[in-house]
Image 1: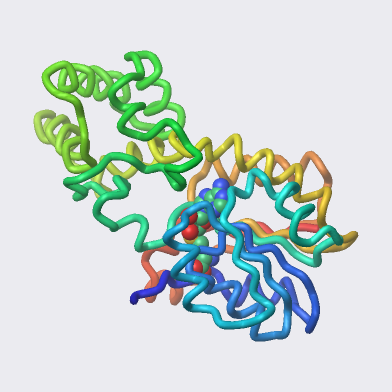
Image 2: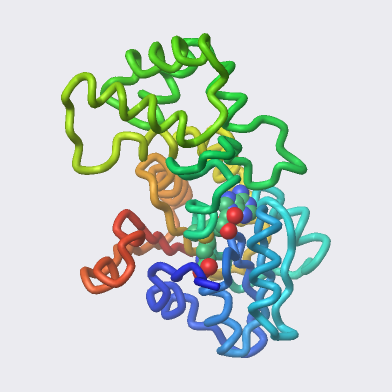
Length: 282
Ligand SMILES: C[S@@+](CC[C@H](N)C(=O)[O-])C[C@H]1O[C@@H](n2cnc3c(N)ncnc32)[C@H](O)[C@@H]1O
């Protein structure tokens, strides 16, 4: 099994400075890269993930009585805390987005090459609307707003129109079909981009499917209710709008804060870290 490589690991751990018995919530536990490091210092970690598959991988990977895996969405952090912890915690981590295996796994719909699915739900058991539902039902204005505002796509309107024309012929059912439509548009206009133009559209669709901005806002507010005075919160984001939500929240509350970006060496060894921004505050 190829585990997700944790991003900005030493920066997170140095700032948390975990001591034996300290309690942390890793609200996006993924494959537990950050959690493992906290546990190795004797801390107690409650690891939340909305993705059942990732939680199973991590539960099998981490064999430590101080590790408590919890299936759930971090928007429910307060309820989860009440149920499992119910005492102020020393630190909270959120490493937003997806792990490598989720991105590439056939049948989840996150990948351009997925020829089976366009689902993108982190938890299909609790979420009703998939990315396939959105792409096949949003009207032109809704798609335009999604592509222009969240994806910051230059050709948001013609792409929305092309998608609507395509789906009138047949339902768009897979990541591959959607990526082909986007690629065809760019090729027909002879436009070349350094980064695959489907990247931003897929990310926007994933954000919409999983209510990511709304959930992040709830999570940031509720985290304040469960953290110790002077406890540390660390958020790693991969999208400028997501980072803006975190930055504005910190500013509004006048928290003491510090920002970290991955070093050149980290980006060299883990290309996926290139767009990460870590904000630590208390
Ligand atoms: C970037 S990965 C975390 C990687 C982790 N730090 C590690 O070292 O393995 C993000 C994880 O957060 C989960 N996730 C994303 N949004 C979530 C949410 N709202 N609630 C709970 N888990 C979420 C994803 O399923 C994924 O497993």
